[in-house]
Length: 95
Image (cartoon, helix red, strand yellow):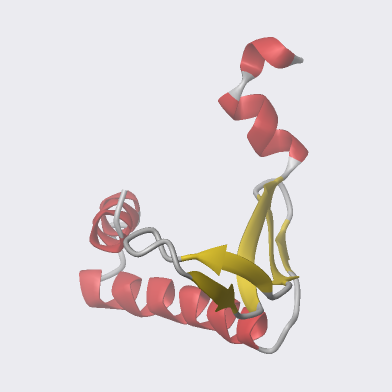
């Protein structure tokens, strides 16, 4: 599902809302999540999961085309950990 699909489904389930209002809600929620992650905060949505940024250390690497050694710089990696309810919904037989 992409962002526009989410907006359309939200509008279809909430007939009292205009599509542009649903777009504004989706944009606001995703914007706040992004802002929190950029600030280094962890974002937890109960029953769904949590988002956080994990710092990856610098490491030696290799250019796949030339085989030359290169230094891969440190960077932040986005991590998503599904909540218990989401894991159970995705894998109902694993209970």
